[in-house]
Length: 231
Image (cartoon, rainbow, N blue to C red; front, side):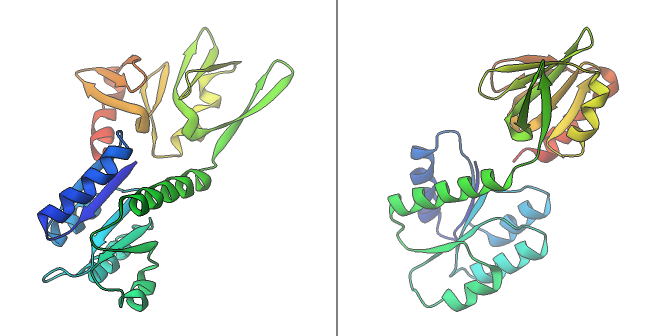
């Protein structure tokens, strides 16, 4: 879960960040006190799963910031933070997900983050049909951590630790995966889901599950792809 917080009051931003991090230990939270910097972050191609924006800020208020974020193509949920409840009409212009009165209630914040995560997962339904002997199974792309080919056999390694095997050339699988920006080829025998990379060091990819995957010289561009995608 990638979270963006923008509040010109540093203490308020830190407080909200703590509420989220205590309940979502794997959340990547970016806090900004300058709306212009938050907007530049969005313009750089970063895509938060949810944004919390303070409405009353100098120069660029939260409503204007949200409008600019929408113009840049951000379509995710936006939650407004305010000390007054008279901004609802303005928030409709940017299709606000919700708004919270300050200081925010922890349970309300957690509930909003859970709703945003559920919405993201329900909208992420792309996948592929794989045949295993006489059985057929549909695998969601987001469930795939990495794909490996060995002896003309394709191994789908899933995020729950399980593995699905198929007798199939990798060339039959790769085009459909690479059509999504989350996937990249790092080796003739490997395709990785960059959402599940922990970090890259040298010519080795360290996956969140603990697997180490090599990067061949031919596919070294994956380092730039991952860096530009990383929240």
